[in-house]
Image 1 (cartoon, rainbow, N blue to C red):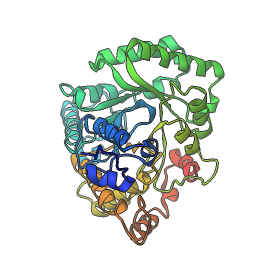
Image 2: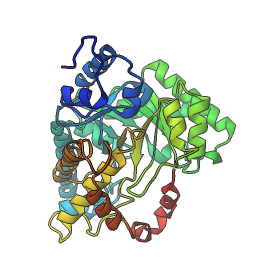
Image 3: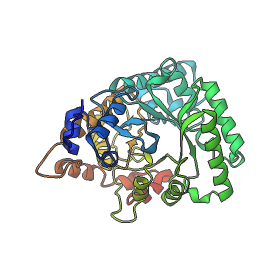
Image 4: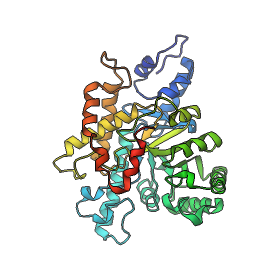
Length: 387
């Protein structure tokens, strides 16, 4: 346990003595005394599916301690794992899929969730019309093992007829009832990729919906998702009580601007950030996701380097990759182990919370042509190189 006496502890001592590289720099900076650190450590160790081998970070002002890698609800490339269940190659699935494919698919999702819980990954974020039902089924009987960040994706603010508070709240209530999840730990409304396209009236309805849902107990914490940094910063500053966290992109080539960064606002408002598209829609990889492909070992290493790189930015609570198999979950757990053993270690060649030079060079080489490999629907990710 953390020392509770009068002697102050350094950040590195705190990490070493708790045995967990667990708190973000932003969270630690706000803890002035050893007693405060000990209290936060105690909260962290009581988080869902806590494992001492996993790193945990505070999801901003929500106060939730979530794993440094969380599970994104999309299941792209799961068809490469299932071999033949092509109906599930996208992130929604085909309602006309065969019974055999459907059974294999649900078994896959349940196995991935199970492995996440076993390694200490404790939050799942979903954002599509099919995902709540799929993961509601996978979580049946073990709801308290994972935090749920809920969104109905394009059915929310991107659907013009649904931009009314009562409609949005009714959708959430019905979705929770249908999936038997009872409540969402976090409800994030999916806005336009360019959130500034929303009118002030639509923002007002968005705010009203979040307020109502929280008062009704449908969700405990609230936020949003967008690809528009300026708009996101405006929401954090204008509605600090309701905009507790945001889902927004951050990739292996993203860098924080030294001045006037979006993350200046994130830190000031104590907002949580769940990072989408960490692998740039798989553009960082050479292979197609097949577990027996020729590039599996190399792609697994690139995935680990990517996660480790993203986590050097303490303003990012957690990247949320979509994971297609229990083996990919294990690879994410290995990324955390490598981060703790290498990136957080005391070294002469670089400062703490930075990847060793050889690993940084390897990641830069692997991602050199990443932007060129982006599909036409994801070219906008280039806008997230300097944040």
